[in-house]
Image 1 (cartoon, rainbow, N blue to C red):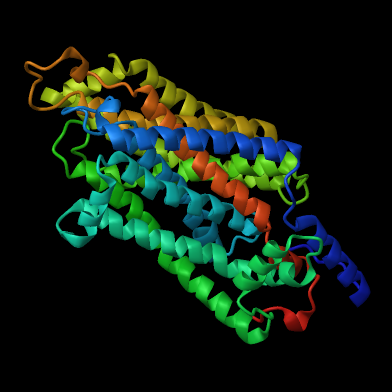
Image 2 (tube, one colour; image 1 turned 60 degrees about the horizontal axis):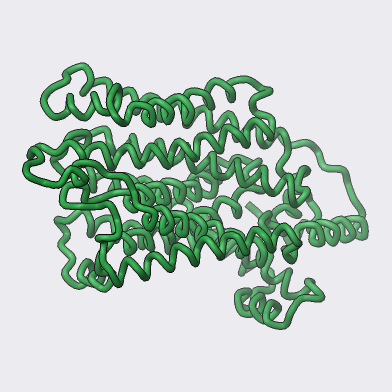
Amino acid sequence: MKKKQPTLSTSEREQAFDALNEELNPRPFGRLGKLWTGLLAVIFLAGLFFYIKQIREGLGITAMRDFSIWGIYISNFVFFVAVSLVGSLISAILKLSNVAWRTPLTRLAEMIAVSAIILAALTIIVDMGRPDRFLNVIIHARIQSPITWDVIVITTYLMISILLLYLPLLPDLALLRDRMKNIPKWQHKLYTWLAINWHDTPEQKAIMKKSVRVLAIVIVPIALGIHTVTSWLFATTFRPGWDSTNFGPYFVSGAFMVGAAGVIGTMWVFRKYYRFEKYFTDDLFDKMGKLLVLLSFIYLYFNINEYLIPAYKMKGHEADHINALFTGDFAPLFWSVQIGGMIIPIIVLLFKKGRKPLPMMFMSALVILGAWFKRFLIVVPTLEHPFIPFNRVPEAWKHYFPTFAEWTITAGTLAGALLIITLLVRLFPVIPIVETAEDLHLIDAENEEKE
């Protein structure tokens, strides 16, 4: 039940709206912001340098060989796809559930989703020895191929995510166009062009709200599909550890968990450095903490399903794979991921003090870090335990560990995603201005949408 808002006069509402607009307007980078952007740009350029080197010299500069045909790039791709699902979680599922406290999070979640899915697509191209051959996936597409399915769902999800970011942004773009002063001419032209003649008329608002609702409904099955299809890239391959009917929900639940953690971590950054305490409140962190605990329990359930049955049967090559994870070479990383990336966050976030902003930030960092290495564990151990034994191959081929070039390119893609978010935040309000004003009843009733 909403608290009854105090009645304000017209002039008081106008003053409050002006103050809100001034507070939430995008801000130019300060010294720290410039250092952060410069650091991301340097890491991205370093990754680009090694990628150009990889194109020139081939995938021989990586540690991938005939047996370990996938490595850190595919792990990174799956991670980006997972993070991108946060857009559907916050903007669609919470919106359709009519969760009122989602307002400060929607645009932030969509910015994260768009940047993550863009870099997911680019990471697939990075993994290809000949990027020009990506066209073959389109020109010679075969509907029987899970790779074709993945291209279709990723492209569709990217388009819908961009629309879900852009359409609700229209009222704020018009506001920036009309009210934001002392900005460069190119920035004003950008707002004017992107606002596409938006004048906040009832007809425009009705069309926009209806369109957003349709997109929010459509993106839910697409979001479930994108990570399910990504899991099928593994599950349709006859290899130990991947031959699993559990992979679809296992991937989807893990994706929602890491996406929620990504939003929490970003919330903390804006609360700390943008002074958005009144928007990213302790209560909002508490609610997101409860959501993260719920998603973590669901993921824990699918983890138990994923490993318990093969460990119970311990047959053939599956036993070799399980032994490598539980007690072998990958055991330290495996148990660190399970305990540090899932069990500890669950325990901490079950307590109210653990759902305060600072501990939430640390727990979300653990979840994100654990999620990335979890994708590494999904890819690499399986490839090191093939059904066909290693025979007469160099010892180095029997094991995979990324080269410096692979680590640098991967760091470049991660920096690229953060750079996109940073630039979006620099240009556009991270918290919806008009929607927040409507929630606070600072806009005249006749200008508000009638449900």
